[in-house]
Length: 171
Ligand SMILES: CC(C)(COP(=O)(O)OP(=O)(O)OC[C@H]1O[C@@H](n2cnc3c(N)ncnc32)[C@H](O)[C@@H]1OP(=O)(O)O)[C@@H](O)C(=O)NCCC(=O)NCCS
Image (tube, rainbow, N blue to C red):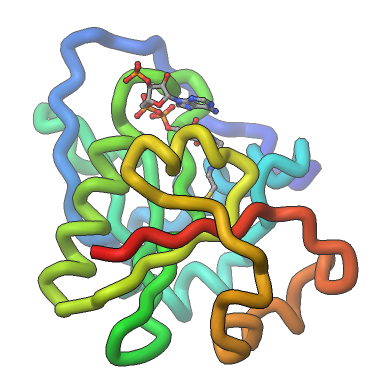
């Protein structure tokens, strides 16, 4: 495991958290990389390189605490594919702060962002269908999504053995 993944900055969960969602900044990339790749190490989500994060940074939002807006508690992205289609990707909550609604706050915000763009359909590839089902996402066959969304998959280590579940939400 790379040192910068292993040294994830753990924090005690606090019921006093006041989640605030904002667009990601260059200074957030280190923490985003650590949180995402912490889960990738145990195959719970796909890994991201720092290059991928910097290149797509404008897609990302993060959750912070209102009293400490520099610290990254969770991150995730909305990636637009077409005039009516976008993907929610790389949703990851600090492993010590799960089940505190941070993931929900973030997904709600990304869906609002999609609505702001007049996106009609949002999809996700995930190992967490129950979590996404709560927002109304429904499972579909991979082949029901247009071919263009598989562009990124050519770079994926699981290209030929993809076991992620495809889900869509019509806004
Ligand atoms: C999956 C994940 C994003 C959920 O975020 P979270 O902040 O822990 O979830 P929330 O607290 O917002 O949960 C909202 C609800 O979904 C439920 N839920 C959360 N994770 C769940 C799971 N894995 N399975 C079933 N239900 C789940 C919660 O119990 C909660 O229900 P409640 O409102 O009745 O209490 C987070 O656990 C995570 O980062 N997991 C690892 C990375 C990952 O799998 N990301 C998705 C890749 S696209």
